[in-house]
Length: 138
Image (spheres, rainbow, N blue to C red):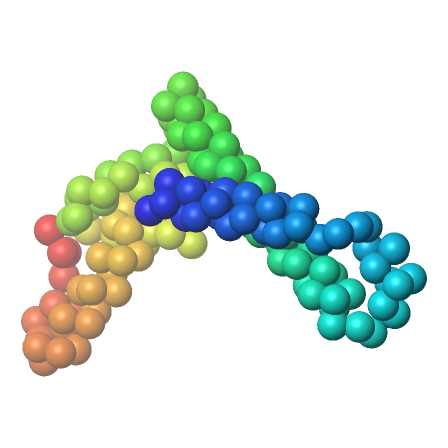
């Protein structure tokens, strides 16, 4: 999807640059000839603003891809030492902290917050509060 977005942005930027090239002269000469509040001046300024916004969006898209690639490479080369797998959903939990996991003393391990939320929701929905209360999920 991001490749399609990048392609669309590049095409839009190219068309905006072509439209700017069609203006007869520079912005200063247009302002001097038609005035600051003329429709031509406003159209020129709006086109420049849109071009700058689209170029910035493209740069941010490319930079976010670069950052994702660097983070992925970093994680491959140096996996976090404090990672583990959730024994319920088997997803890898990177950087095990109290913010993204819950510790269960019944088996001495960690489970991810998503599994805790799903377990609590199913307990409440199914009406098994007493049955699952203080029980090991494994």
